[in-house]
Amino acid sequence: MSAHESAAPIRYKYLTRGTRILLTLAGLGALAYLYRLFFGLHAATNLDNQYPWGIWISIDVATGVALAAGGFTTAALAHIFHRKKFHPVVRPALLTAMLGYTFVVIGLLADLGRYYNVWHPMLPSMWQGNSVLFEVGMCVMIYLTVLYIEFVPIAVERFKGKVRLPVSALNGPLEFLIKLADKTMGRFISVFIIAGVVLSCLHQSSLGTLMLIAPTQMHPLWYTPISPLLFLLSAMAVGFPMVIFESLLAARSFKLEPEREVLSALAAYIPILLGVYLGVKVVDLTLRGAWAYLFDGTMQSAMYIIEIAVGVIVPLVTLASPKRRQSMASIFAASSLVILGVVLNRIDVFLVAYKPLYPVKAYFPSLFEIAVTLGLVSTLVLVYRAIVMIFPVIQAPSKGDVSGYSLKGAVLTKVNEGY
Image (cartoon, rainbow, N blue to C red; front, side, top):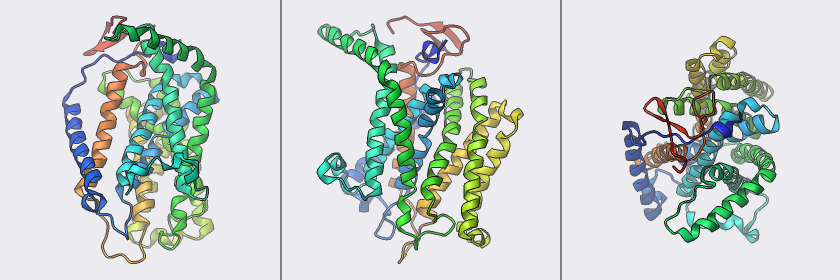
């Protein structure tokens, strides 16, 4: 049985104590976001001419793009390399990537001074081929479109033959469009999957190019000509941990049995990817003669050591053990550390490593910046929860055919076909 045959909408209560907390954070974040849009960056942030970017770039954009890498890494593994056993986690990874990039764009709008001009790169007359940001913007825009196209078969599966609109005259045309999409998408979906992988590699690496224009403002531990390669390798290394992290959290939230065999097998790739990333970092430090900065006792050296030790070495050693990979607690802890390491890396590159020419005061995010970031993360989780309760994204917890089944409490119950 393929993953899509056993995937089903999760029937579970939406509002819990956790979701109510997230709704509160999302509401506060929305208010802070609106305040920024109406009153500007100066009123809402602690950004200035010396620190023109803050956590909205380092966390909401750079980190968000990296943590959405599970979409292209899992798609490549399952569809391009034909590892069919990983199909059960492809759809959740796709949804995480789709929502991740969507909220990256929303977060980027808050950081742009003239957010209302974000559509300009779509006009050929305004293209600037020498700009790294132009390449990143175009790739993210196209890749986000590709992600939504890849989600179309899931929506078709959910609503095919089940269209029941209040205006009955619209049922026929909409059902026709759904059937048309069902017939055509199967022929071209492989093209979009390959395009998604290529586009991801392009902009993941290009994000590492952004700080190459500031060699004198960057700390030597992070400034390197191979920064684009390191950004790509770190994104690839965090892809599978993010899939594991999301899968285990979703299983716990909905009281489902996790895909133990699949997640354990997926965890086996993580030490390899982390090892490649660590090896490149070591060679880079050696060739640039930057080892002396690693032990100079500064805050930057401490942050670099924490980033590598916590985010790379500890999870690499943990997941190198086949026995630990069989433990869901171990792979969850190790995956969490990899995610934390990538978050620290993006914060280090864009904030810790950066020193302006004429600093007057240190940057620290305002309450509005923090509220917007927490609000975006909370809203993403809430939207993810809603989508998996409507669409067949998560594989149902049964060895047999459980299409049309759901959970009520911790018990599988039959669901009406018409939903």
